[in-house]
Length: 437
Image (tube, rainbow, N blue to C red; front, side):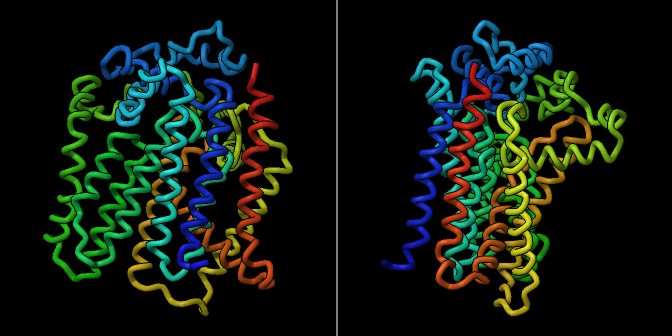
């Protein structure tokens, strides 16, 4: 076999397994048992049947109804139509979903399969990003793609009706383009602007990538010893297409929610005021209790806490995942401080810095959200999956190389086969039995 083709063949196998498992999740996860799925579905319904962008209004979030629905596992006699608290979201995902809604008469499954398809695209983007950074280590790219593919909570989210998969794809595509951009080969910035426009029209959790784009310009300016005027023009060529695509949306929001609330977040915070607030939990549990719950719940829900945070996995599974994370972190630190490994090129360092900053900005946004509301949900860290998967691949590759030579080729495949099996196990052992009426 041509070894140069092996990484792409591995990617094809990873995507095929991911799609198969994603379809299983889409089919067998009980309807509405993906977080916020009814509200996202109602946005699509409003576009398809009302022929207009919905407006977030008082009453769109009913905590009492939502608690009743989740407690009773969404019985058919209770309506989900009043749940419209996602109406402030940017419209791109919902516009893409409207044709499927109309074609299949509003069925949920085709909309879920759209998310699965978008998730498959993210795997290719993760592969391409890591392959671009480490062209001399082709084994890293499939590892990164597999890490993204087989996190149980991630596959559960990318098999639901929501804008998360498109947001992650848009952010990931932008990161890949920025990784290519810093290569000092006169890459043009305006296509990056189109990707940034896609981000702006998809979900606010991805907006931090604009800061990463600005950093990419600064890094190229430093590498090529350009002027600040050149940097300003490069950034303008990124921002002008992005704003040209998104300005109508922001203007509509200004006219709807007020010019001081172009993202609709002030209106959103007023509507969802019934949600638990961090200040309340701080008074109840103190700093140590709040932080322990933040860390513990975020870790569990990053890997798998299904439904509306209702289905918690057995402690032994979280313990095994904790051990896996510890091993990957050890391997990554070993790679990072290994003086014997080939020195990174300036371009590689710049590219890895972009991923690091992207990850840090995502974490800061997550923490900032939790300053107001109790949202200890690891899924809010998924926009950082490409940086995290890059670190995981480096750590795993480092660990594999200290093993006996005869088992090295099978170690990564065994790990990811195990994670894929865990995905299926979680679906049929926990999600279906505990979330079905």
